[in-house]
Amino acid sequence: MSDAKDARPAGSTARFFIVLVLLMLGTGIEAFHVIAKHRAIFIRSLDARVDVQRLNGATQDEAASLRGFALTGDPVFRHEYDAAHRAYVVALGRLESDLALPEQAVMLGEVRRYDAEHTRWERERGGAAALDRMRALAAAVDAQLRSRSQWIAGIANFAIGGWVFVVVVLTAGFGILAVSSERRRLAQEVRLRADIASRNAALERSNQSLQEFAYVASHDLQEPLRTVASFTQLLQKRYAGRLDAQADEFIGFAVDGAKRMQQLINDILQYSRVTTHGKTFERVGIENAVERAIVALQGRIAERSAAVVVLGSLPVVTGDPAQLSQLFLNLIGNAIKYNQAEQPRVEISARHDGEEWVFRVADNGIGIAPQYHEQIFRIFTRLHTREEYEGTGIGLALCRRILERHRGRIWLESSEGSGTSIFFTLPAEIL
Amino acid sequence: MPLPPDVVEILLVEDSPADARLTQEAFKDGKVRNNLAVVSDGLQAMAYLRREGRFADAPRPDLVLLDLNLPKMDGREVLKQMKTDPGLMTIPVVILTTSPADADVLAAYEYHANCYIQKPVDLTRFLAVIAAIETFWLTVVKLPVVAE
Image 1 (cartoon, chains in turn green, brown):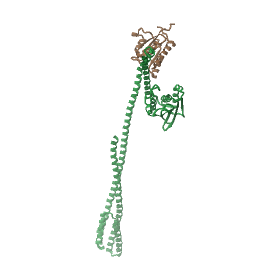
Image 2: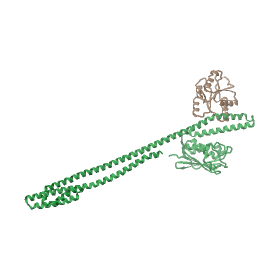
Image 3: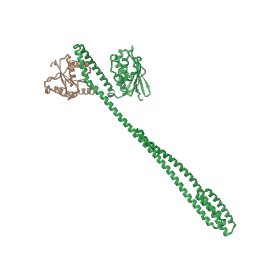
Image 4: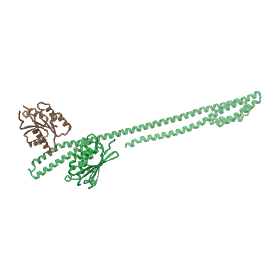
């Protein structure tokens, strides 16, 4: 929901910048086109200016030689005049090809028409007028040239200014966009993190209060229960056989019930202690943890003449030493307990897999039908009656609890009658 | 040299009537003759020990069994006052409590408790512990004899 809302302004900003880029490309191409065109005109205009100066020079030479001939009648002046006139014609031809603007062409047309309409001698008489016309033409070309160059400069300035403007706007825009999107992303992340943190805190609080509740409730239940258990036992001890058989039976049930309840409460306490009374993590040699479990189980191992063997070597991990020993105690204990083999055999091994160790505790016991593979890890879940196998169903639940605290997982592979392999993982030490 | 008393006086400071009764029952089975007096809070305990008010005629106990968690004045305070009172400091105090807390154990010995026992949950073991207290404190140990 919030993603879509946030995406909309970002989309329109993106569209705005696409338009801006296209605009920039358009102005750029147009500006270069205009500059290129006017640059050509400008260069031709410079040539035209030179032509006009030559034309001007030729006209002055013409006038000078005409004046000389009129004064002296010397034929030399006649040759000079012819040379000047040839130069005039050449310059005029050049000017014609170099003139790029229509207004200049108009001016030139007038010059040609004047030339065509007047004879040489008439032109001689009107020499002054022809000179004036030439001067006017030269001035016009100069003026054109100036205005043209100013115009080109203007266009160039405008184009360059436009480009600079667009580039600046674009850079700033992208900057602002990047910064604002980064800021938005950061703000979103901060919000998200705060959200997660507050949810985690709430979860932690509720989890902790639940654990504390379990702990306090079971701890406080212990006291009155101890009284019930003690006095029913005292009753049994002092009055067994002194009442009738039925009374003995009833007392027996009461004693048994109270004892079982004490066991259950102890289990809940132990279960909640995994997190409420856990020790700080330290380096734990699994070999030692297994050794401690075997020592604690010595009685049961001897009684069943069980073989508990470690295959290969076991690693050192980070964890709570007491809890890791408890883990092996429960698993090895179960492997021997739920076992009808002549000689129960328990194999313990570990292999390194990526960032974790995968442990295996395998037995030749009675096995577990696949439909129970999940539920067997729940607290107080049992697959047998107390007559078949004693216990409350805390063992595997406690193992899972311990592994949850150690960021590990636990599962099993088994089928009825073919033994059980319990697998669990522990994070490998970062060396 | 005065003879050791043939009846041992014991003061039990315990707020739970059931626990007090259970302890009385356990001492009933004992071999040593004893008088077990029971008070249910710290103030009564101090009054008994100092023979104040209705305890004016109370005997001086040979052994005190003291619970830690008590109403009005708790067992830690009773212990502290006893062990700093020249008239009471020689009376052996056995802490008998349900608390397994290391802090309680440490504090008790710091205040010179003579021993610390956690009450077993199971009746059989409880009876065994009381029998052990009786055997040790009333038959093995030589208690101080204070001339009055």
